[in-house]
Image: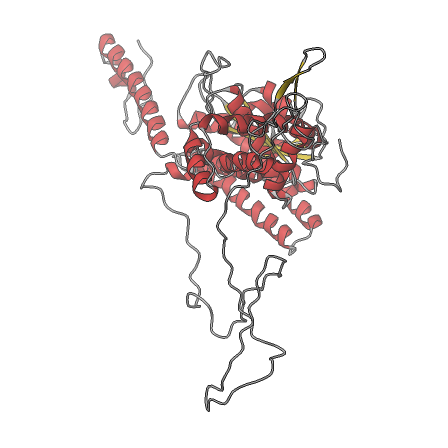
Length: 513
């Protein structure tokens, strides 16, 4: 006699089951087991189809038509555009320089009666016209000439002459004066090429066209690539020093995203997936492209002996950190809780209960941010909320699931198990000033890199990946400090070419690591 199956919504009496032939019982049980497996697969596929940016790691650009858009802000009563009676905002006058032109315009006759006018207006109406002048490249040619022999003719049409010594026969070539680079392109132009091809994501071809149209400069693709690599090598020490500064900070945001690296130089023979990592502080961000997404790279980026707090998602690469050193991103967690709440049955109940607590937590946090709730009151209020959140997780992990079960309920239970393991890392921001509950800073830092990835399809070599990482590090950091990118890259190029001290990404008022 086979054991009677537990059929949903079907009453099967013991007498009916015992009266069923054994062979039929076996068939029913086999079909029932197959039905349960197919139902689990169907549920998993339905959940996969319903994934979007609000319940998974998918970006909003991948959302389908069925995704409910975010609620629009309530329309105000004011009309569009400038409001009647609002204070005027006039264009500010630019400060006059030695290159500025000033034209005085005096009326000659009265506009009413025509009488000739004399004198001057002590407070004339000022009208400035701002224009971009025609730009031409400044070309400096150095002709280092010398007579070939006493009484000979002066050679003026070939720079860097090489002459024979009339005494010993040694060949001697003239040298460029100090401050003149042997590279055929100046430091500002070299910096501009690196800046435009990184921050503005210009391709080699686009750069060629832009330089020709703006400055009349014709430059080959090979020269553009050489200038890019020269800048990348020059920035190596600058980024290394800045990275040590980041690893000495009290809080670090960290994240990673895919970034393809080809094998044109033989450094990726297995065609491994590349990853663009970033560690972010308030003033400096450091990027790196790696063929590894594991703990090895995470330790290199954060620092294996790092003693501060890391704000990140729940990816396993960060599990080497103690939970007391971590703040798990609540924005990622909210998406996972939304996915649980969108499942049916007990999963929905669990997800909705956890989401309510998450929403209440962030209402309080926003009040702390805008000053309407004190930090002390916030910490006190979170105690009970945290206890309730943890109790929901502990209740969820008690639900019975199979070891290899892949049903939506099993996913819910396993997510709750993972959260319980790092539960203290959910609440670090509550008691530690300066720590944010989300990893938005790192995600925002990666945004420009993601756009660059879409237009360039990653890099084709290790050198290309290094250029991407170093330029992203420099440009992102300088913007955070409101410093001039072009001037900084120009100084870096000058320092590399003429063996001068390198400029630093670390602000002057910050201590060096």
